[in-house]
Image (cartoon, rainbow, N blue to C red; front, side, top):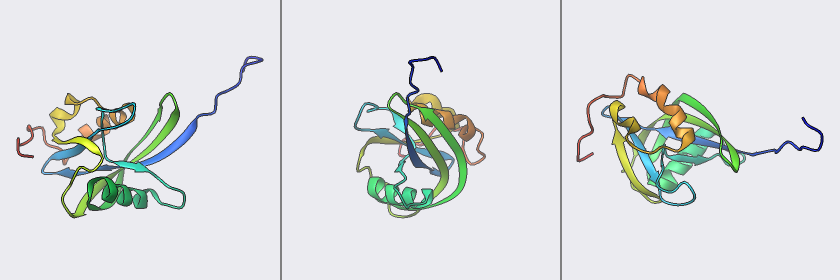
Length: 148
């Protein structure tokens, strides 16, 4: 380090994200607030002190989308430096076990097939997960049903 320069310590934000795949499509949500408004993301949120990532994901999915879920396998881990903080994101394959996905905080939602993954403007950390997700055997290359 050069004399007189201080190394900036970034705040670390730990989050859990849900990769919900049904009928060959993955569920994506569009942010409706903040500096990244209108960008797309996998739903989820911050891991609070004392919570496991899976507990945080269950809580966030209930709060934001009104559904009970069961995270299973860890699909990907994304690390990304945003200007204000470092994001550490664990992405779990997640099943909806009770309820209907209902937008409470997001602006919009879409079910995306493999060939549609890059048709939306993803948050940078979520975009880092797309490559791993594109090759997932449960994703279809067929376009989504208009009613879905």
